[in-house]
Amino acid sequence: MTDARVAVTVDLVVLTVREQRLSALVWWRDRSPYAESWSLPGGFIQLDEDLPVAAQRLMAERAGLTDVRIHLEQLATYGYPDRDPRQRVVSVAYLGLAPDLPASTRAQVMWRPVDGLTVKGRIAFDHRRILLDGIERARAKLEYSPLAAAFCPPEFTVAELRRVYEIVWGTPLDPRNFHRKVTGARGFLVPTGTTTTRDGGRPARLYRRGDAESLHPPMMRPTW
Amino acid sequence: MTDARVAVTVDLVVLTVREQRLSALVWWRDRSPYAESWSLPGGFIQLDEDLPVAAQRLMAERAGLTDVRIHLEQLATYGYPDRDPRQRVVSVAYLGLAPDLPASTRAQVMWRPVDGLTVKGRIAFDHRRILLDGIERARAKLEYSPLAAAFCPPEFTVAELRRVYEIVWGTPLDPRNFHRKVTGARGFLVPTGTTTTRDGGRPARLYRRGDAESLHPPMMRPTW
DNA sequence: GGAATAGTGTCTATCAGACATTATGGA
DNA sequence: TCCATAATGTCTGATAGACACTATTCC
Image 1 (cartoon, rainbow over the protein chains, first blue to last red):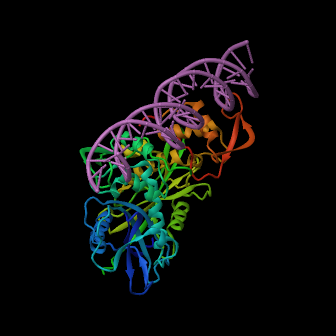
Image 2: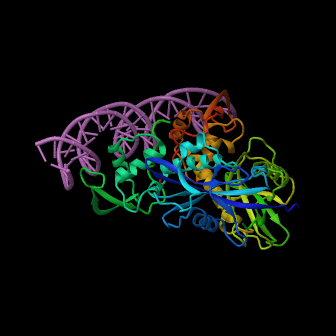
Image 3: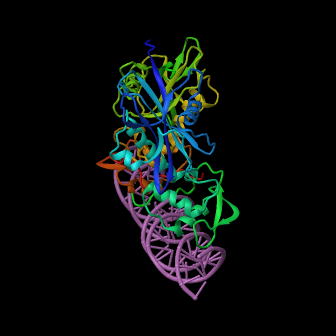
């Protein structure tokens, strides 16, 4: 029984909505291999460390993000033999959904709009593929889970939540039908009883995220 | 930068429907650790081998299954430090959905109904958790993908397909509404033009699986 | 003809999508 | 008063779920 040992890393696809764009946290590589390219933040797991713990540690160490509100879930594992030219590396990717937070103060780490990254940017390793998988997972999750709220501040309006859907999906949504659906989905939104006028116009009710794990009925993406 | 190397395995959750039960392929352990327990078939990856390739190799070597019709997809990765008492092992689980095929001729490998395994059986390592995750993934996939056909022979009837749904979900479905939905979902079923009387009664039309990757509209599980 | 299973049809409550109107606060 | 945005309401076509009937083969 071959018992080959390989290096195992955790790579992070951290997404947020900022300045009206879906953005990902990226790490600027200044060393070979793939010098002068963007990569996903990540690093090796430690020998006594569970995978989600490693993901959280790297989120803090590499991304400067410690906020407990960040949703973290396992995305997929990538392990084809020559994905890292130096050695065999199996990478467990985690997907993080975060509100618009300031990332690490290091200049090496920054938020970048995903469309620039996925189409033309220089991306290290197979990280473009991982990023695309993460984006698709996030888009799908908005349909049947209340995770869109993970992109919002603790208290948010229906319009702000709709903006998240529109930006992540890249489609305009009817404000009236959207309002009817999200306020009708049980466990999605909890009214705080307060209002805000930060968007101008009539004061909007503020909501917090409810405790539902999934959405019934789901929010459907328009026109497949 | 710590560069700890760990052993990486691929474990297989292979599901089928046989004798009216959802069943999984299990491996009888006769050696420590976890002697006299069932485990999932699996093994170490090789150094030059991609993960899906390893999954397919182990499907053949350990399960005796080489049928190309078996659907294989990555499930999740499990890596908490003491899940194997001998050494640090990170395991990438794959989910396989197979028609009712004879498994390996070895007595060590057999199909077992999942309800017996998940509730009371002696199961090695964290394989009960992995098995449960695989079952839940399969149940969810029947909703929005045409993968129920992966449990059927190449040509099958609507009633046989319905039986798959009923067994995997554990719920009876209305035959008439089911028929309307599956024959209406584009790309799900392709009529062969032939019929069969293997179930008795009026001859049933035979179908092959279509080329749709997902179901629109989805088949919804009753009464959440 | 009877038994067994396949396939089609109808009705209704609910829901998604399109669209109009009223409500509320700030400048 | 005007402007900007929030919130609610209405109509319609589509669909899911409940249920009844017709069709086709074998015995």
